[in-house]
Image (cartoon, rainbow, N blue to C red; front, side, top):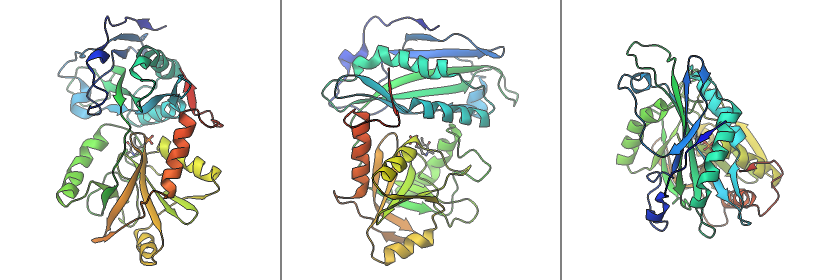
Length: 348
Ligand SMILES: *Cc1c(COP(=O)(O)O)cnc(C)c1O
């Protein structure tokens, strides 16, 4: 049973849909649930407000935090869907387990989210290309400076409007010095520390003129892993190639959706190790190669330049590239324009 307290007026009236920066404006409500004495207390949906916590909360010192990110869309017929919340729910619990945090049930994560999105769906205009970005997260709240697994947690869901995220083709550098995640580490978990640890190498790459890095495996630096907020996919001829999942790669929902769509379009999908040398050889053979990031935020982020071991290569990014067809197909499913045969869309 969710205790709901509605906000008296919406912040939407002061929100400019034509000009905003992603991730700044919360919607009107927040879902909160506390874990104490070994159980989740019944959740509340409250007017959005700051949360109060002890400066000694364990999450602030030792980083026990996990999050998710997914989207709700308004379909052409006006109905609102959340895209694959079941898969995000499972991944959330996988991340929680790795961080010694208590699992959440579907009633809290999915039903709570649906209830929250029902209250916020008016933030999704009928005509504009706006989606609602949904951010569930959990933090360790036990006030205690001793290094230990927390006995208390807070689970929250907040939402923020997101515009049509047209992503300019990006310049990426293949990182062969710094490491994001090693096998056996926490790379496959969506835990906060992974991102803080990746800022420095990304900043160094920026100074060198690149938008982001592509990580390589921690042991040999010979194989491509992912981009840190996006998985990486490659199209050569009729093949979609993407690094095989491991404990150092996050199991992206967009990655898995794009792989299924590619199969359905008759492409050969290869999930395997991708060696840097293989990419260099393909570029040197003058083949048409597409490289792109796949993730919830941008869906597809075309790579127009990739620095591999000091040499810049230029993947194909023209309008007729396969990646745009894959993206279009995914958009069509979410918008209800073609059949959703895998039940990816969950009506609120
Ligand atoms: C969230 C994330 C992705 C993309 O996953 P999606 O489920 O497609 O949004 C890829 N890599 C990392 C490290 C991530 O945190």
